[in-house]
Image (cartoon, rainbow, N blue to C red; front, side):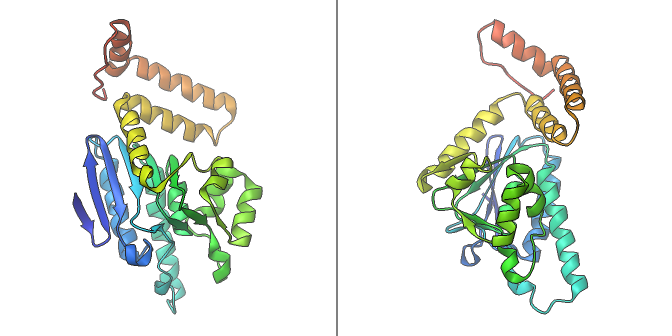
Length: 261
């Protein structure tokens, strides 16, 4: 275990990295210093070939219960805008990671916490988790991508409902809407997430990264363009060492040894 910040802890289990936001007394609320360190960590991870899957989780009753609103009080507008730009860069860095990412939502995921989870490739949640975008109750709207990423994940009508009511949602409701992939009893969340993460990490890393990239790119382009991107990526993977190894291992009825080349 490595403490990267007063409230940011990293653990590694083989090719799986686990990043835990450890600010239990504030339900994981994001201070400016925590967002800065998170951004630095993500920049470093982007260049780290050893980690194939990142799991993001919280501590106690909170995943991330939004921004640290105390830091908003009587702050100059320019300073507020600067913090929002910092948050946007950090959240986008998480979304753009080449590694596959899983949010293990253990508790409250509100405001920036829900937005942080939406930046991950998959969301698994404890039965005790609660999600919401309650910024409207402060006279604000989401600033970490909530209006945009939730609309892309679950449709514009639900995104409008969530952002104008500010209500909290149980994970099972979000599972039905396709936002959450699985809901687990609290004590089974991390074992379930880690089993999934290890399964993904055991697959060919170039193929996993390509699949993530092509799905993301394809969501914003016409179908024919997306199909072309898919075909190009498949052709490149077929020519890779891992592609040859995977086919050979299948024919020889043995486990493949992928090296990411």
